[in-house]
Image (cartoon, rainbow, N blue to C red; front, side, top):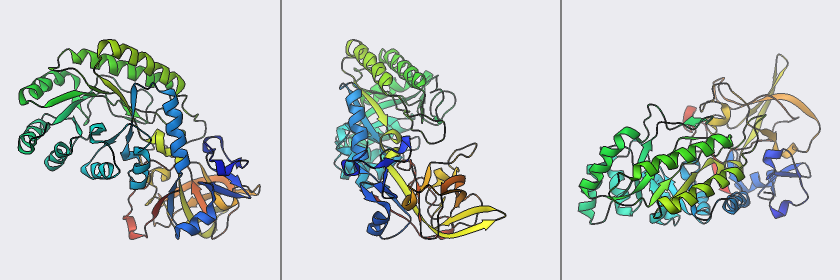
Length: 416
């Protein structure tokens, strides 16, 4: 995944090999980090590497069967330039709000390959979805009469799929989104009644959406969830009034963030999808199979960059104080779902090749002890003005952070 312009440069970590080091500086998009900061014109900022996005999509496409469609879950990173790039690399886009829907359509996404999920869709959002011609993943019986009314008013079909809350979960996932009581989807035992209501209202039924969990690094768990999802969809297809044309098997592909985690081996997952696709060709021949991925496609292609504004020593501990923190990158601070806080991979971008290191903590400018980007990590010795780089920041970084907290200055995002 190293861009051609970085040929011969030295990677600093196996999981960050898309960001090599040359002449002591980290390269992002083939550009030294200090030059990129000058080009951006300010810190903090997020930078997303276009070459890495393309490489990840191409590598995945080479493994996954051509009959399985790849969708980008844009909630992972809704930056318009990133979405525009991804639209040209994948087969479709999955959105979770009318705001995301507008960005996807503006980026040129084909409405026929856009699906809209979310447990609390407002009536106006449902009407927008029908007018746009996108697929609505129904998650409540409440949505049906609203969709029916929009269909009659606008004179266009309301395309719907049922998001099913299955009776199993994705084992080992960072966030479990299926199995047990959940706000997502329709409990599997309530699906037959919902299918009957869809037929009564004359909605354009397309298929099913099953998403059991996310951020999973266990091949066996992902394969098992895909198999169970397909089997459940096949069982439910016996109850539908028209053939299943769309089957979203979810995603869940994770990326390594912390020490000891290994990159996901996608080859056996792709082989599992091939077996499912062969079954589907016989058992649900009209169905297009979809895998919905967000973090896996964009997470490793992004970095967060913040500048050191102070260097302090308190009772022997070094603190590097930066101009951005949890207000910009909540996940790296550990306050986005971590039970036990762990450090994201971090370096000093303009000293990344240095052999002179120290144990230091990187903290942001906020008046709270929660504002911690790196806790007692071994880092290159850094001074005021140096650039701290947080890797694995391409997903659930900028848009998932409390940017207004304590009213500090904001950041910018760039695609390079």
